[in-house]
Amino acid sequence: MTRIARLVVLMLALSCANANAGPVVIGSKAFTESVILGELATQMLRNGGIEARHQRELGGTAVLWSSLRRGDLSCYAEYTGTLRAEIYAREAAGTDAQLAALLQRDAIWASPPIGFNDTYVLGMRKAAAQKLSVMRMSDLVSHPGLRLAFSNEFLDRADGWPGLRAAYGLPQADVRGMDHDLAYRALAAGSIDVTDLYSTDAEIAYYDLVTLQDDRHYFPAYDALFLCRADVAPDVRKVFEQLAGTIDAPTMARLNAQAKLDHVPEAKVAQAFIRDALGVESRIAKDSRSARLLRRTLEHLSMVGLSLLAAVPFAVALGVLAFRRPRLSRPIFAVADVLQTIPALALLVFLIPWLGIGYAPAVTALFVYSLLPILRNTHAGLADIPQDLRDSADALGLSSRARLRFIEMPLAARSILAGIKTAAVINVGTATLGALIGAGGYGQSILTGIRLDDHALILEGAVPAALLALAVQWAFGMLERRWVRVH
Image (cartoon, rainbow, N blue to C red; front, side):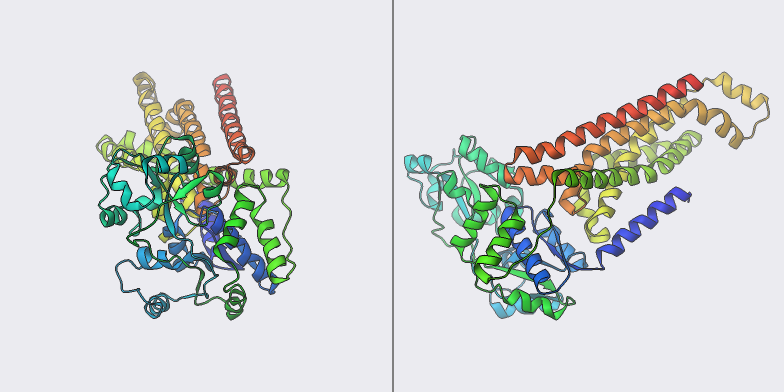
């Protein structure tokens, strides 16, 4: 193993170790309410003298639950309906006692309910619902032509679309998956007719939507609470008990509106609630745009740089092996081709149980996507060397290793460099998905901007990512031109 590879392995190991040490880590899902609750928990713990850190917008339930059980997260806000119908769908969890026993088995405890029920509902534009006389979910049966689009998580959840369709006998078959926040805009624009909503969403009133009555009582209660690992400090439980029953559904909808519609940062929304409802003054760190941009740039460069440092020696070595051993080239390229076809988000989620959240799975995924372009260009560069040059090397009596080092690799270097450039540009774009698993980078600004419908935040992530890709292309172009001049 090369020194560079050893360095990469050491840094990944340290990142995994750091995830399990230090402060209480509060996680939140990638929607506004969860981020607000995560900020509430973090600030309350800090006010109680407990060091805490908020890991924001980590995707869906599967990501956070897996991270909690693995130890990358200490606590996060969840809902009783999700626990019963999704996490423990195949086990008896109908009563509070049964649910508590299952959580205890998994070394997890739940705080008292925070005070509101954020259940799933189906929503339509009020004008469309009145025109079609659709006021209940069962009324959808009479309108098979309605265009339905649900959040991607709702499409596959045990308490989501499959069960809802069976419970009501709904005839709609062509249902699309869509980001929850984008679905609101599509509904308001008339691009879709029905989508899933959370009952405390501020957008319901803002977009003049109507929620359909769950007349067959399909959805259970989704009482919000905090889940924590059994090994967190006992004082954490005492802090969360202070929040029991403090937020009802109208209050949560108001807090969501402040963040989502008025564009008040979630940290300030949480700070104001703690001050007004609990009489506690909390401090929040100020984050200027320049400081945030610098931090995101360093995070993004770390992911791209580490993945390339690991991939270049490995992929080049595979390319040389595939060239020198033609029988091995087919399986080597077959494996690389298959790895390249794995969707990035699926690969990131797949890696979480083994590597946790943060840099480790993000760097590993980028490493995988770097292999094919470098491998192919290495093989092509070596294969394109004229045979007469190889014959000259043999005539000089050069060993196989000397011929590779002094003749073949220098002649193939330009092609190899082009493969590295391609991998680097691909990684700059793909690294934006690292935000979904807590790796940060430019994707964090893009993800938050989409969630809050804040174009400035989206551009804050998208423009630097595009400029970085252009800078990478320019830098490698300079290296290629210098190589041509020298040789």
